[in-house]
Length: 367
Image 1 (cartoon, one colour):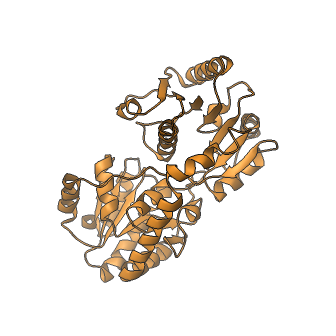
Image 2 (cartoon, one colour):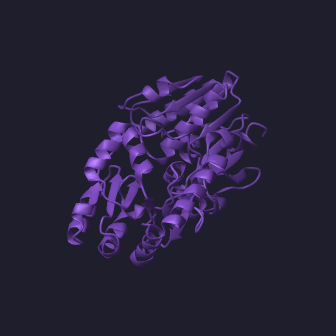
Image 3 (cartoon, helix red, strand yellow):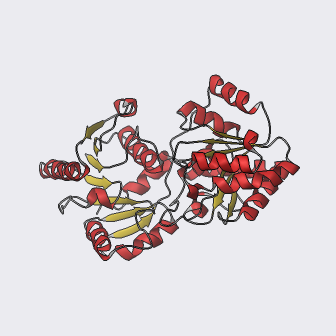
């Protein structure tokens, strides 16, 4: 049996939630028995109810208490025997677990290793990771951040987060999108929790110039978050409010419609304080639909998007660089389509759980 300890699990949304949910589903589908110990949720638990070979236990209460209860429960389960390995969604999920002979792997995403850190927190991370057999970083960038905290015999490996096969969009979702944009082209699409580091503000600021070359251009962004009001104000100030549509949180069908309909996926991320994109799973999701991406060079975007092959990677703080990259991709239909085809081929070849699950298990189960 595989034990998964996580603070981030569906139906909660986000990149880590998608990664852990996909990992658990792939383990169950491979025939392995899985127990998930997760935080509470008020959301729809259909996802976990449909999992094969997976039991999900939720732990509520105040955060400090539920972390201790979860770690205690995990320790009891391990002591009873039959646990083959433990996977933790971050060092925080391992911190309170007692040392064990069972091999432990910890996922590393990037933001949990800030550039400015207190000595106390540094020691907490070092101590937690010392209990792991393997630290699995999502990109070269994240591996570099984690490396100062990892010492032998703990191994540090890089596994790019994979995705599950993406659904075809339904006709109703496609019709909703068409009604919103009135069929205008080209269509730029973004999908993310709305926060400054995602770079949507720079895309909006580039629209006035891009409109001169592409009169029908539209930007549609799906995702909730605290930056929505600021982005709407920027669009008004730039005179492009009618071209920018913020949808808020979107369901799976509308998400599929957005990505399947996009001419270009845009999320030119940048660093904002301690906040940075460790990889960017949504670039792979866009690639599934044959859509090239514009990514930011800060963080792990250069692992997710092959610059000049499956899209462009630019300085996310530079409006000029973003504008030039978008303009170049939209102007060359043949090149853009070739990049989309290359993106699709790459994610099918190496970016799904069918091919990646073994890389997560390798070295952990045999430690």
